[in-house]
Image (cartoon, rainbow over all chains, first blue to last red; front, side, top):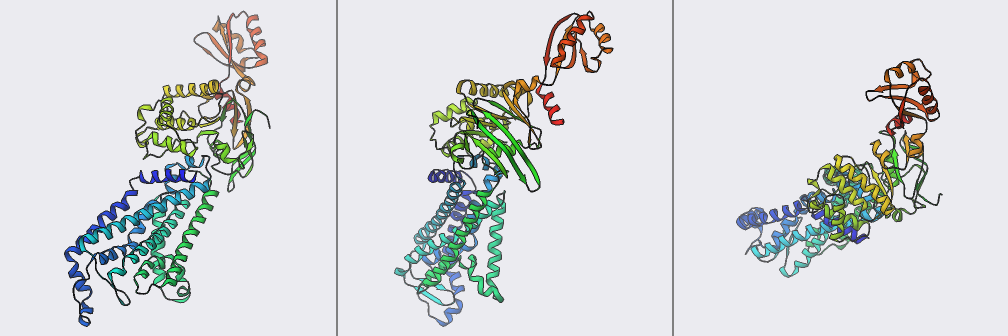
Length: 279
Length: 305
């Protein structure tokens, strides 16, 4: 029965206009970034590396498909959570708003099964969104810019050889799925707590903003516990682009993000199973 | 438990904080009943139906359906019930056919298009099978609600205000459909309604609840024939009858005279003969006697008391 309900939930997701906003936004934004980089990329890159060029000698160009795909991945933290919550935040709250909780929960299917199927559908949607983003950003970028070394400036300068990059992107996108699944899980949990679709989106984004601000503080006890905040780990995909990948830090991020997802799902199950359907 | 009882509710209570929505409710619905579930607004009807459909949990008491406790046999019981609970809400972005198909799947039935079309035809919506439900009027959604309730051929059908939003033709069709479901398919129907004549016309048993508790339960005809009745005497001399009744022991019981030579008197069943004798003894010719008691009148007397 789980797979039956899952297929129904996927049909419901893809029958709603709002589910295509995320795909539409990515389909529009990624080519815009690529077109901008195609026409003005060299100038941007020159401006960005102006200080470095005084100390190092640059030959050739670092503007290639890998760099553009890397730039697009940066949007994971800022834009994709909003796109994910549009759907995940509507999974349960949408039923409450539409009055269809009554229709759904009076069927001979346990509430556990319904919640798990809905959650799985939200995760599949998230995976689809990241997969689409990876396909557009990697595929189109290669077509337009070709391949080459990946030049990354963060706390240090890293130059990755072109035959040492593809696998890193593979893991980075997988980690991106984990990050966005955590955001989806939190939106899904809020979706069980309220009876309108806007609430979960606003709450999830507010949590991301508040936790990001807290993460930036280094004072008192916050310093000791901030590693537990999921927002601290949403961009841990970047760790795959360090010369030596820090496996221990990636594992910690995986645990924290996974922990938030599992806790959110358990809270959702508890709330829905106990819930009196009054809408 | 009665061998034939389909629903048995005992001492059912549901509180929301300090507010007792349902308190010590008892009722029994037997196999083949069209069971009227009546009560004024806020009496606890919808809360009871939601508990019956496992949408809210009782605070205390028990609900048994098909002879099994609802809490421990939830899925098995719900598989045998078709219901409309309050408003007919559907997935507006799906078509009528898609809505029925997914609801069938939720009941573990993979319906063919032919079966779905038959269900839609039964409620007069076949030509709108491919239309999105967001284009439907309230009455059409109500019909679709009935179609989904009957989709999986349930033994028990729970209908909460099923004729809301329907035009007179639609009301008549639904009434006939309900009667057919019982006579041809031996379905048991639990019918909550505000339209009292509707219950009077089709229900064989009923319960009246008020403030969350059972006021009275029994056969519709027996309940309507108990207590005071409105008796209509068709007489030959209205003016004379007015004079003699004004000075008689029945003076306070006279409800009025109508232009078609009828006098309406409120009497107990036992006193109809006395009143007839009184009129005949005073030279009033009687062409006919009929006694009526509308459910509306009965309902108001019960709920007000």
